[in-house]
Structures are given as structure tokens and as C-alpha cells.
Image 1 (cartoon, rainbow, N blue to C red):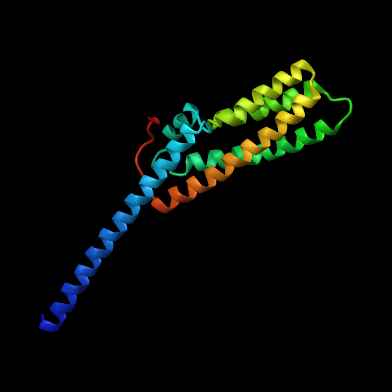
Image 2 (tube, rainbow, N blue to C red; image 1 turned 30 degrees about the vertical axis):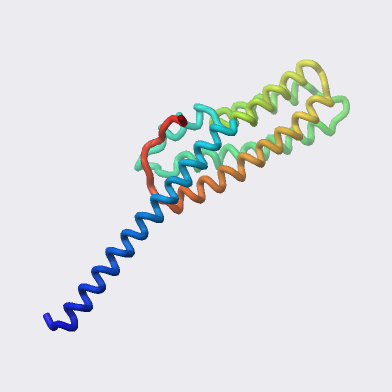
Length: 174
């Protein structure tokens, strides 16, 4: 090989090694940030153990399983929010219908481990049983805030997860 080409190839190999090393450092930093974000979702009470169980169902054959389930849950929840908003506008309130909608919402939220949302669902259902329209309306507003806050956190988490690429198996929060 010509000396000029040998030097070029050597420089190119060094550049590739540097780029690979930089990529690994960047990916490791993303993974640390992602794990920190995930841990904070548990620490702040947004998620519970059900989310970990959902993650355990994800595998190499379906690497986006958790994100897909969360997306489906949120699609379904928008329909339920609309139904609840319409039902809360009626007079007199049909507490059995409200409770039924909220039972569906609670089930959907529970399936993804949405702890704060699930707690608001339970409180709403208590107000339904007590026949308190004011309690239902107040709790529903708080539920929508928790629902939206978690959605934003999920979006940031899944975006970071996609950037980091495939990672390790789910682990329980410490």
C-alpha cells in the first residue's frame, strides 16, 4: 500500500474509533437520563408496579410493546373523557352512567400503571356513590390534569428511549 494511503487509512480508522467511542458515550448518557426519568416517574407517584409488569412483557420481537400499549390506552381514554364531559353536562346527573365510564377509565389507567390517574378515578367513583355532582366535577378536573401530566412525561420518556435505542430488560424501581 502506498504510504499516503496507509496514513489516510490509519487516520480514517482512528476517526471511526473516535466516532464509535463518542456514540457509545452519548448513548450511555441517554440511557442514564432515561433510567433517571423512569425512576422519577415512580418516585413522584405517577407510576406503580403494573408499569414494570407491562415492561416485562416487552421483548426483542416487539421492542415497542410498552409504548404501543400506552398509546392505545391514551386513545381510548380520550373517548372516555369526552363521554364523561358530556355526562357531567346533563341534568340530572346519571351517577350510574358516570360510574360506569369511570370504571372503564380506571381499568385502562390501571393497565399501564398510571397510579395518580387511578387514584383520581377511585375518588371520582366514591363521589358517584355519594351522589356528589360537585365532587365528581372537581375530581374530574384533577383527573384530566394528572392524565395530561403523565402523557407529557410518557412522551418525553419514550422519545428518549427511541433515541437511546434498544436497552436492557425492565427492572424494579429502587
